[in-house]
Length: 115
Length: 111
Image: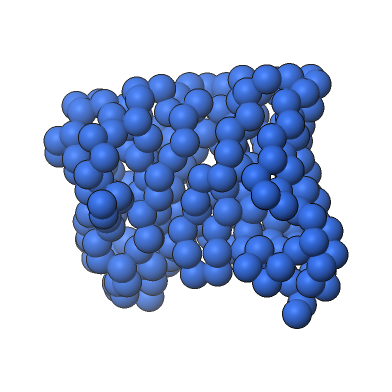
């Protein structure tokens, strides 16, 4: 089983460029999440989706948009990239629609640099 | 807002020594989860604690949930180089259906 698959693994952008990070899970999970991880900051939630067709803001949503395309796929879009968005981005999923009490399964991450 | 704090931020130990990381929440938690992230890797779920005072063991790892359900600890006995990584605790956010992660404790083991 692939679990949670993220593409691309690495990306370098120029300030102002746009980009979509892709995430797909094959575990038939209902909830999906996007986090960013910066040195010394732990994991911070950007957006999440508790079920197909719904999305909600997390702690740090500004500058991002998301789409829950179907049950498997949850994409993260940077419309106009800024250097402050340089980070490692992780997608995760969990089984139920109430994700705060269930284990989350993470993808390998996308390392994004914005110049 | 809710905060989940972990201490220490870093810990160097000699192989064979014990290690403990502590997690404290500003609010009562319905459950707490622990994750491990190897260098260059992604977080991997280790365990979930639900009951007040609960203690769970996984080989050399012992996890505890405080009586007041506001703190937790992870203790590793006789560390090995394979234990290297960052350990995160995470608890439900009081504003909704999401987890709040602590800042993590990075464990380094000298062989």
